[in-house]
Length: 150
Image: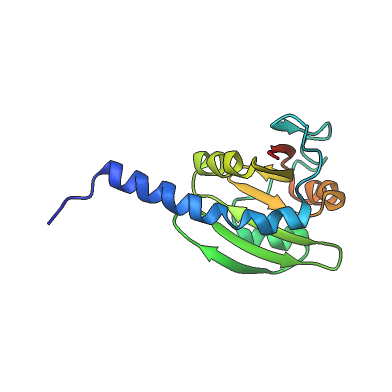
């Protein structure tokens, strides 16, 4: 019986992560694609945490609750979890990661699509750009502009 080593697991993780990045096409419909000439991952001028110092934990259900909605889990994999959340004010796509390095790999892949995202410790929230500041005031995190490629 062949032994699965670190390289095999790493390849599997990379392949899964790559396949899940395909869901970003839907994210760009939510709030990406504008400002293609912007720097790759530039925090917004309002990147500080909200006045209350809240930074949401990396659980979709808690982040959704803070945003005022209940999440419907769409992807539940080892590398990430993704849920959709619809409130009266906005729609959100919430993605959480078990490790910070997986979040950074996801953001690197997402940079191809461009757009603005709300980014926190081990989580990313996508919504229409006009709703990002309101979400940041509830969840904390940083608004990051990712550059797209044409």
